[in-house]
Length: 134
Image 1 (spheres, rainbow, N blue to C red):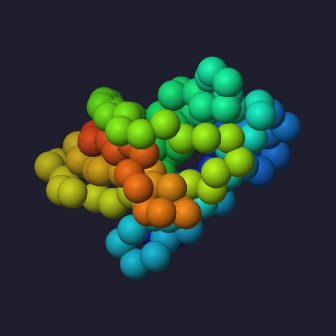
Image 2 (image 1 turned 180 degrees about the vertical axis):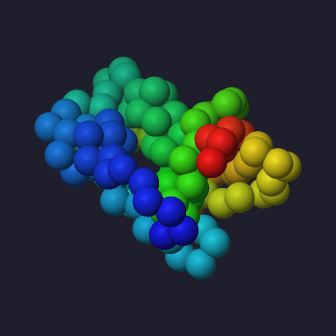
């Protein structure tokens, strides 16, 4: 990491110490942040469909984790999501995020979630993060 950054062990999306969190483990693969997540019964919005807020949370966090894993502190400035297909409980999802470009303290990123079984796009996002002043 390029700088000292506090641990995010209680983060709702990725914090491994959060008892009600998603516990998604994000890892960098070159310039791309990746993870897999299998939603359970606690993540339902309607019947066996995963709640859109859970999908949003995973996309917001995959883009945030790129900067976090680089040791850069930042906060979501905007995140626009497009839901394309429903995700179902018990269905493993592939999560991916990457940086599109940077301007001064503003970083523009993209993310997507695909079903692992058939690689169908479930949702994607465009987000921007504001880097904290150093």
